[in-house]
Image (cartoon, rainbow, N blue to C red; front, side, top):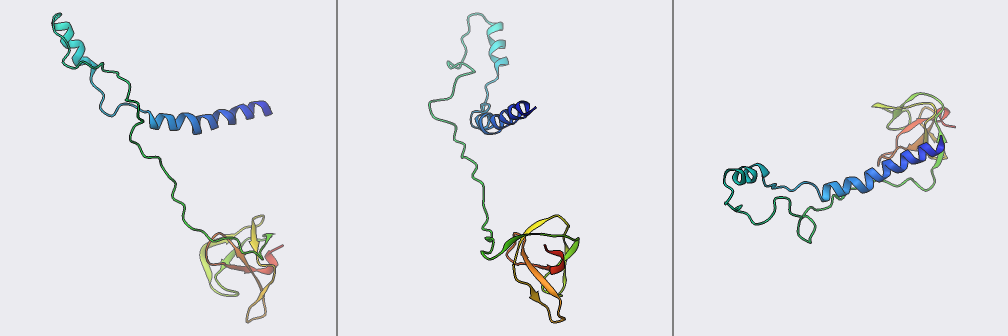
Length: 149
């Protein structure tokens, strides 16, 4: 079974990294000459010569097509804070923008997710303990510390 998966993965990688770039770099001729007009003119008159002396399926010149490579655009992103440690979330809870503050609409964490979190709790004005965690954004949200293991 493992040999089949290895072969399947190798074939997929070959297709993605070798065949696909070759197809885009050496694709179809952007101005193909029509072969029907050449065959029609040669069939109507046996003495006529084609107006174009180059064959219709000529190979491109020695230089590659003038297609620029696609370079991915990478936006800057924040680094994981150095003091943060990997923690597991043990309950389903919404995410807060400050300790005991306002809920961030549509942002939730679920039991079983892992995040890098501040190893030290933040104590809110009401005395509750909150953990700040890194979720890949520039602002670090909070969740109750009882939900972090």
